[in-house]
Length: 397
Image (cartoon, rainbow, N blue to C red; front, side, top):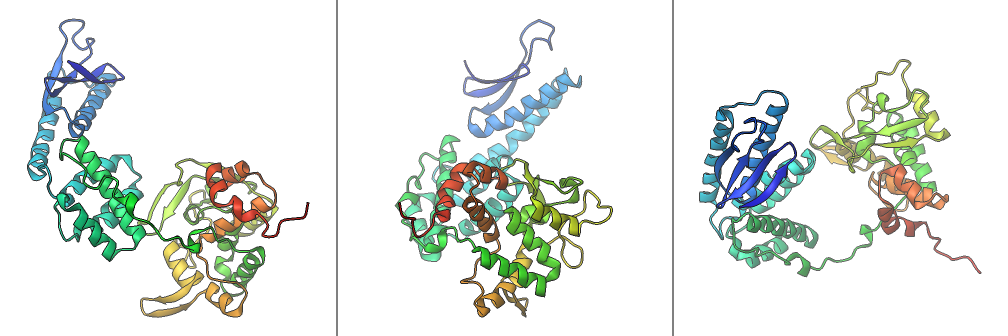
């Protein structure tokens, strides 16, 4: 007998003769014979997660005095788990359908991911790529690779293959397939190097020109754009910001949430951690100038012209850059500045963050301080930003 896992709270999960069983604490039987619940489920990774959920439920029932001494409730849940598992095993024999394996992998990953990451990347983007593959046979991995390279950019193809490899690695460990045909395949795809991949902040004169243009032509959004430039926060964090996140005297901001405009949901920050931002005079005066007389804690600091939540996508395409949306032409602020020669080239809205970080480093703030302000690691700041603050012409020594 091999003990696979010991759950805190004295409910154990054991592997016995190739099957999982639950070992209940002796306190349940008041010190008499050890009680086990046989699951009938094979000892593999998929079933381990199923059995663990029941073990957790039993522990909770014991703590809340809701334990079922007949064990009927727990055996019924085990029976529910057996049916879909049998279906899965029949549907996905070794060397089978890559799409079916991907569906199972998504189900495995879902509880481990942020909801936005799961919906956007797993349930949508990569699922859509996998659905249209010319073959679903995982043994035809070379054909799948060549198809992806012919239909997608090298970077996108490399990403899809990387995810397929992770899926098949999981399938191997779960006993669903014998080997991972995509292992190491993405490493052979060489990506072209583009200057556009580097951090490309606005210069201070460009930043000032953009702010002035918003004050002159889009005054409603001027404070929003200033805030992005002057705090370096992520766009979704500024959109999600509420008055309850700002101190009464506007001297400190706590970034705790972000807003996903595509999925229209609130979520935690990118790092999953809240961070405090001390406001300088510039930011404090900005917040005080737009704060209502009696701000409600759950009201957004920055809104669309009609008072609703700002859509990052719509703002970027109709206000910031400009273009044609739903057959209507929008003149973007940066489009006008580019035509006037006030900015050297177009850069997306997120570059307001790059600008803040670069300017703060140029002002002499340490890498660790800037990292804390913007919610990055010092390693990321050093790798992507610190080089941008080095003068092009070195001083004489």
